[in-house]
Length: 375
Image 1 (cartoon, rainbow, N blue to C red):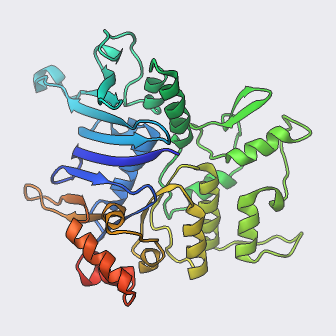
Image 2 (tube, rainbow, N blue to C red):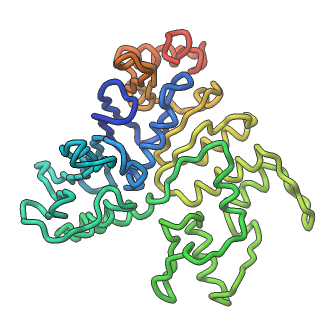
């Protein structure tokens, strides 16, 4: 499974000062008042794991992040997008930005790949070989990794990056629900490698669970215009049927807004086996559904926000170090007289204090955070 270990933000939008964040391999919670950049941070994390900074082509930013996969060395990726040094007369009315990137890896932390807009992609210290797609192109890191000389490194990271390339932020607006229940043109939803290998297209607008693709492949009548499966044949539907109490057969059931959100979340999990990014996940959900949602995340790495204290009370806490890496604090920080953001991990002292209070068992996690001014 792909994991985001660390994110260092040198320059990005309203961030007042540089931020360096470490993350847990399990559930990470972004805390803060409204207007402190929580959703923006989730969006940035989504861009990182999807290797897609195409929405920032007209913005200055500089970030560094570390990714890992099992049984392999982690890689560090440095991405920048900078205004060119041309004068306003030379530029006219336009602003021009140039992107650059580096991939660093190995036990000796050597430069594996580098890219700049003028020369293209270089492998190691060799001269540029190609004008590959840059960081402003969706999935750029997948293209970069395919150029690595080591087959082992290439295969491990390529598969994991491909799996994570549709890990968008799940929000409250039900946009993803509308995408998965719409009746649009299905072309592009599947990547058909050959008659025996069909995969979800990671760059398609619609989300398709790999388990569903496998069912279609194994059906007795391949390449039909439509397919029908029982809930018992798909885990995500079987779980939802029991959770929502849909036991009658042959009846139309109208689902509520919160049921739609729960359905969307479980469908999202079926599509994203490595990483989950969800904004206000538990808002309006019953306790039982909150527990089921947290349990369903399983071994995935998760990045969540919530103003509902119930989420915090169901998150497993095992050590002070896990606390320090699992909670990201977002605060307002004025910058040159304008609103700004400050993002940071919990301090070691605060993490130790929270974990000690948690072990006593008198206060809920949400109460500990509030009483100590951390939320």
